[in-house]
Every structure is written in structure tokens, then in C-alpha cells.
Length: 547
Image (tube, rainbow, N blue to C red; front, side, top):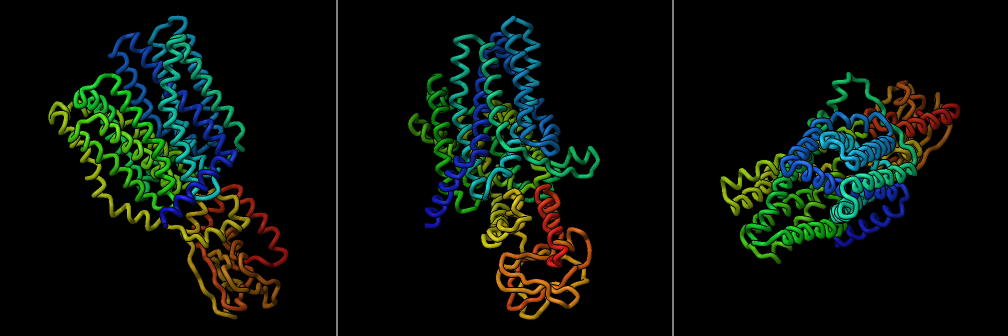
């Protein structure tokens, strides 16, 4: 019943994603970017092959991935300094210009070196899109379930792009050659930019006062300093390493173990894509449990087992089923991993955290695909499948206790979260920030006629009334009364002054308390929330209702 209820909650969240116009526009922008990226990869590969054969293809793709992996963490600083919406639009428009130049160069028969240089630049610029997209999404959702659903929907868009993009690119190649692909892809990126223009302007995160070197390394420091981030990034990188090996093993499976041809490679890829789409249903069934770290572990395990089984029973029908399972696992890993990063990382460094992840993913893909032929030469084909498949369960066995702790620590009390959402100074906060606040709330009980805070004392906490009534007293005289849903204590924290009033319980008072640092980091770190708090303070001070 718990799983069924969770699935129903998640399905409602999926519906909310498509009813949310801003999320819908973000998904459409992602569809344009993904479709263009896959079509572009096909067109570029064929152009490079016709220019200089397999050697040029290998050199070009290694240069693209290598340059992108090296620069992604540093470029991601822009996603934490500027409007994330504008970073995405800027990325799209720069890609439009570069792809148009590539189309003209290819059409006019210019040097392949010039086209390759533009292609590497496109790959470098493109590393900005995903970090900005991942960092922007939490500000567009209304609750944690919707965030998971939005990531699942985006993963579906990516899965569809895996089919539609190469097909689109192939049709364009047949009709007009590489130049036709490049100009059409420029159109998909322009579409993405136009969709993004209709999303409301987001507020850039506050700029931390730090040396440029410290700023550039903030994404790395955030990951190393936070257990959940370390774990998610580490597991995602390990899975991507196996994913890079899988790119080689899939071809080996089709041609050597199944004794098929090029068509078999296509069938296996199709089954993989179907699995990615089926994975969205699995996310709907599991996400409502709010055990994202556990779901990440399930995805990691489901990635590994089919690789081992593929070496044991070499049958096409069975292999297709295994590819579907891997596709499901891929969706679980992607959605759970991205949502955990969005919920765990501070908003100020979220773009840089995604930039580091982007770099590690590119490097892991390249490394996995490079070392696999050497492993096959050493162990043989079947044992390579077993060895690569066994790698992830070993990693999971070591990290399972930490995964359990992440889920235990990530449980958000629903009552304080629901109450905090009603407060005007918290209403503008992104759902992920509000979630962390609710997790840090401490229950406090005050007996009748006892002071919760006393005038003149230093302030160390902010309070929200869960139940009961309290009187606000200034210089011994009662000035107002507070009840459930009211709050107090913000002035002493925001202005660093002694308490301006005494709040005394009239009957038993149940409170949620937030420590000074947690309250100030949330409210002052988000411009709309700080503005709302300042307005509340300005309205309360004359009436003597704030403390």
C-alpha cells in the first residue's frame, strides 16, 4: 500500500509538472537542445569520417570530450553568478552562431580543420547548458515530489532524443549532407532559446565574498565537504565509467556473442531506449517513498546484473530484455542522482556542482570506452562482461551504509514543511531550501505563563507557532497576541540587536525553532525572501509586534 500511495503521489506530481507552464517551457527547451545535440553528433561524425576516416573521427571526438571535461567546472561559475535562464539562452544563441558558421564552412568546402575547431568550441560552450538547467529547475517547482517528477520528465525527453535525434540527423544527411544537419541543429537551439524567453526572470544567487581561485573551486569544495554530494557524485561517476565501457561492450555483445550484424546493434539500442522510457514508470512507483538514495542504489545494481547475465546466456531475446533493464536502471540513476544533488547542494554553488559532475561524466565515459578493449584483450570477451558488471556491486557494497544514512537524514518532517510554506518571508524560497529548513527545525514546548523569549536578551533562534497562544509584551505591557501559524524572533536575527519584546505563553505553546545560522542563510541568501523579511520587519516594528 505504501508503494501504491507513493506511486499515486508521484503521478500527481507528474501531472503538476505538465500543468506548470514554466516547467513545461523548460522541458520544451531541453527537447530542442537534446534533439539538436544527437542530430549534430551524427552529422559531425559522418563529416569527420568523410574528411579523414576513422582516425579523424577518433581525434575529433576525443578533443571534444577532453576539452569539455577540462573546462566544464570552471565555466559553470557563470551559472552561479548570472541568471541561470540567461546563461541557458546565451549558450543556445552562441551555439546557433557556431553551427551556422559550421554549415557555411561545410557547404563552401572550407578546411575541415576550421569545422573541427568550431565543433570543439560548440562542445565547450554546451557544457554550460545542463548545469544551468539543473540549477534553475528547483526554483520552478512547488514541492519535492514535483522536483523528482520534473527530473524524470526531463530524462524522458533525453531518452526520446536518443531516438529522434539520430533519425533526424540521418534524414538531413541523406537530403542535404552535413551542412543541412548543422543549419537544422542551429534551428533546434534557436527553438530552445525562444522557449526559455517565456520563463520568468530568475534572481542570480548571492555572490560570496571570496578570491577568484576559491570561487572557481567552490563546486569541488562543496562536493568534498558534503557526504551526500560526495556519495552521489562518486556513484554517478562509477556508473558512468561502466556506461563508457558499455558503449564498447554493446557492440561486442551484438557482433561476437550474439553473432549478429549491424541490425542487432540497432535492436539492442532500441531496447535500451525503451527501457529508459519504462524507467519513468519505475520512478513514479518509487519516488513517492522519498528514499532517493535507496533508489540510486537500486539503479546502480540493475545496471550491473544484466552485464553479468549477458555473458552467461547469449540469446537475442534475453539480451533485449537485459537492455530494457539497463535502460530502466539508467533512468533511476539519472533521476535519483540529479534530484539528490539539487536537494543537497546549496543554491549558491549548485551550478558549479553540476559543472563538476558534467566534467566527471565526460571523463568517465572517455576512460571507460578507452580501457575496455584492453580488458577484453586481457580477460577475454565473456569475463570482461563479468568483471565490468561486478565492479558496481562491489562499489555499492562499500557505500551501502552511507546510502542508508543519506536517506535517514533526508526525511523531511511534513508538518513543519507545510507550516513554513504559509509564512510570507519563506514563501519566495526555492522548495529545496525550504525543505532543508524544515529538516533543521527543532520542536520546542513552552509552559503557560512562561517566556519563550525575553526583551533585551540576545537572539539565537527564530520561532513559528505550531499550536497555542502567546502574548507579546513591550516594557511589561501587552501589545498583541500570537496564535498558530504566527512567528517571532526575526528582528533580533536580521538586525543583530537584542530582543525588542517578550513573548509569553498564554497556554501550552508548541513551537518550531530555527537556529540563527540556518535562518539567516536561507532568508538573506535569497533576494526575494530578504525583501519579504524586510517588509515584514518594517510593518511590525511600529506596532511592537516583532522580537
